[in-house]
Image (cartoon, rainbow, N blue to C red; front, top):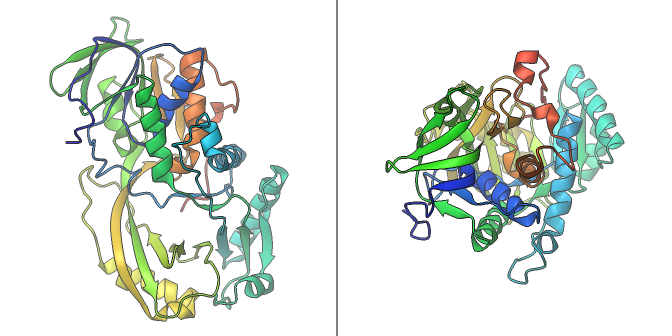
Length: 405
C-alpha cells in the first residue's frame, strides 16, 4: 500500500466522492479546487494506490486531433493548449515542470478506396475545426517519410500540429499533488456499496471495504475499466468493459533518420518514435472483454502480428529487438467507443466519467474541467459535453467514434 494515502477518511460527510483516483479522479479534483465557487469537501477513493494496474499507468500518453467526431477534436485542441501552458495553468507554481508536446503527429494510412474516402471526409471536418490535418497522396507521404513501404497504400492523413507524445504521468502527478495540498483527501480504499434514498433518486452513502460509511452530496464514477462495477453499486448499468491492449518498446538495428509518426497501419498495428527507441502496439485478434484482474501477457502477438506488420511497413524494422513490453486495459465503451460523461437521468447525483476507449488520458483536461463545472454549477460552462450524455443509449442517438486505435 502506498504510505502517502491514509486508509480511512477523516470525515463522515463529503460534498463530492470520486470513485477512482488515477487520471480522472486527479483531474476532476484539481479542477474542483481551482474554481473559486467551490468550497466543498472532496474524497477520492483509490483501490490501487500504487497504480500498478491503472489504465493511466499503462497508457502510451499521446494526443491527437484526428477524430471522426467534432467534439473529440475540440476536446483535444483544449488539451494541447493546456499541456503547452501547463505551469501557467497550474497557477505559475515554479515547482511544476513544463510539459513538452513532441508533435511528430499521427499518420493514418488507407489501403482501400472506402477508407481513403473516409480519411478525406474527416480531414475536411478537422480542418474546419482549425486542426492541421493534411490529406496526403502516396507520393507526398513518400517524400516526407521515405522509410515507409507504400505500394499497398492509397492515401494518408497526417498532422504535426499539436499531435504526438506528452508526459502524462507528470500531468497526473501534479493534478493529484496540488489537489491534495488544497485539501482533497485521497484514501487507499475501495467502495463496495452505495445506499440510495427511499425514492432511488440519490446516492446518500458509500461504504468502504473497511466497513466505514460516508455520506455524499454527489458521487463521480471515475473507475476506468471497472466502471460497471461502480455503477452497479447504485443499481445502474453502463456499457463499459475491460479489454486488453499490448504495448512493446523496441530498438532498431538501423534507426530511422527522422521521427516516426504515430502510424496507424491497415493491419491494426500502430507504431511511433519513443525517444531513441520505438513503440508499437495492437489489440488481440479476438478483442473481447477480459477479467478485471487479467494482465497476462501474450508474447506470441509480437512474433505473429506486430513484428511482421512493422517489417512490412518499414523495411528498416526487419532487424529489431524488444526491450520492454506491458499489458493494459482499455475502458471500452461497447456501444459507440466514446466517453460517457454526465449525470444519470434518474439517480441524479451520480455522475459518469467513463468509457474513453483508449483516449482518456489526452481528454482529461477538457473532461476534468467539464465534470467539475457540472458538479459545481450544474451545467457545462466552457465546452458543452452534452453529446456524451448517458441518455444517448436509450435515445438511440449514438456518437460513434470511428478513429479508435
